[in-house]
Length: 116
Image 1 (cartoon, one colour):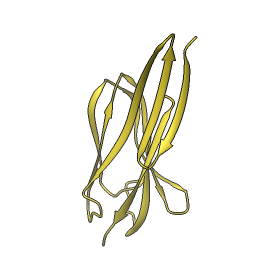
Image 2 (image 1 turned 90 degrees about the vertical axis):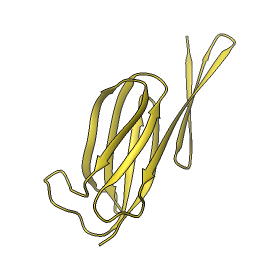
Image 3 (image 1 turned 120 degrees about the vertical axis):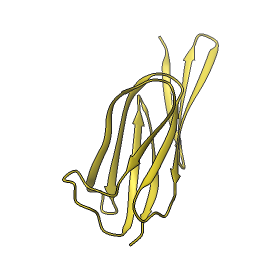
């Protein structure tokens, strides 16, 4: 039976699957551009295999501000855009926020700085 080990370092989530004598590493990395940003920001990532993906934005106190995406995606390069709005469509204030990306058993996060 395959075993999965998840490790987290910085903005990378690493999952190592062991099947027999083979090891396959899946890396989940999150790239933010531009950062800091005044209006919109792009969150780019690469999926090594099709999986369920969730991406949420949290404020500095840990309160969820926005669910950007929740669903299945194909493998390959993916990106999401945050328009600086919360789940109710209201613009958020300038400050520090965090993007949390989950794919399968892996998770990673990145700091976002919103400018006036």
